[in-house]
Length: 403
Image: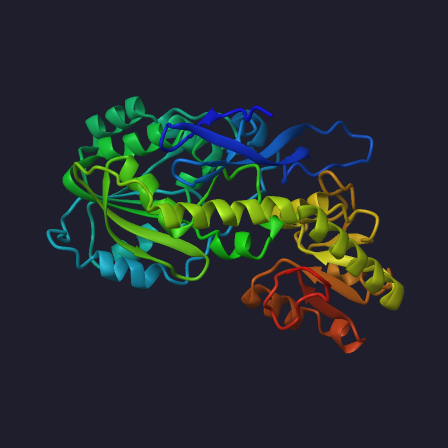
């Protein structure tokens, strides 16, 4: 059988092989008002470059389709490490309090605030409308990554000047054309200028075959070695690579560097990791369905807590719509809507008792889960329990043969 090869979005080698076709999937934040509402579906195909090992989506959904339809959609990126990160950056050689510092971030990112607290005053943060002429409502990361081209970067630096340091958090994994996006960042830096990049660390999720990691908005799924190689391929010298919880953080410099090919053993590890991930879906889907069905038999209706994109992916890829009763979320705007794909109703936690729910599955972090438990004392006092979908957690749901 002939294997069709595509061009890698990072290294540009024609070596990308499709390994996991998840079929047509909905956009994770495109909630429905009724079951009969028309729903856009887009291919979700997970591929891997056999030259650089980078896992990526083939033919990601168009930007206009993943731009939120609701003005209340927001995302919270992990930031517990941010204060320590900025403290370390503020001590970089050649970086002074009057240095020109920029942030390519969206949403409630605290980067600028942390720099200001340390006396940096010459600070710029990208503005979608001012800097990129974005006028579409509800635009965010999906639009920024598409509009920040080398041409746009030239216009920005014409107005703002070149930067001594750019902070680029949770952007590269969204970039449909990584080389173009990273070239834009390069163009905005002074010679020898620093850039700090942060992306999700996907190692643990892929090792554990955690399919909730997949998201139509994330084009790339980085491991430490593939992240470093991606940045070096784009011409950045990687000075340091750290792994705070949930993230990969690379300190880089604008230097002329030649990216080295991944060592054969490292490349094999990455290929084996993806192979295991792609081949395990049918087995884990079956085991998870049996687990949730058993929980339903023993406890009554089972719910999923949190109507985010991880829940959407998990429910749809593992085909749990028949085993679950509802999805629970206390966001006032989500109540009464239906989940994309599964069409499960979204209810508030105050409705758990009347639906007879005793078990809630959770894709929350330990910190968020603890907060939810504290906020729902009546549920737990009545014998209700939260079970995590993440292997390794003390309250991991009892799935058999999931290793």
